[in-house]
Length: 263
Image 1 (cartoon, rainbow, N blue to C red):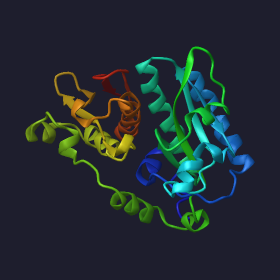
Image 2 (cartoon, rainbow, N blue to C red):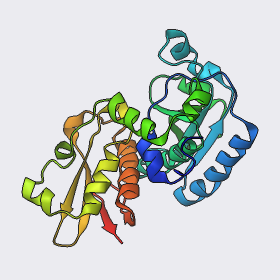
Image 3 (tube, helix red, strand yellow):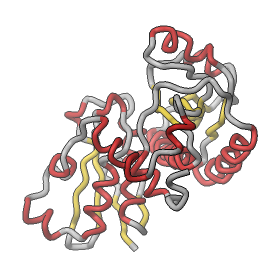
């Protein structure tokens, strides 16, 4: 594989793209076991129950038939407590952690909110009375994945950079002046640039970051103008994870407006 030396989460941030077309090959049993081994500690830490469900193409039958997806059959079921925005934020944060791990193993992924049959998906995973199925992540081998594995890391980085539009750094730091941006530490800029590569519902990218020089913290807030009310908490969690990976070391407080303390 042309990118064997690129094994860190920041490398996955730099090459992950939304994959809609998959090869028909089932996920290898050994790869599935590795993913399950990743899920166990993440579920323990997060208080969620993220589950890998394989070989259920009926869940995506309509999207596959319309051509919106191709050969989608496997998914991560994102299950968590009912009516809990913080849990939805944690779901975005920790499920995206699984997505990035899968990326490093040559798998493709796609967060879905509408291109699936939620009731059919719920039939194939564990959901307790006090839980609900938030969202799903399609997972599998990208179409022509053997060819894709031969592509170099730099080529995949360039493909990610050019394959979709993204808001600018200035838009991601709306509310900061040019002087404040220039004075912010490098880790803050690196964190925002990683968050710019995060997936979000309908690519709305609803999260805005700021830096407070008085105490050296960063903050992440949902922009209500982004029109992302249904998936905002989930998207906030995803963006926070990408920021944390880009910034290097540090930890977020949960919630809209939660602070990041760099270590």
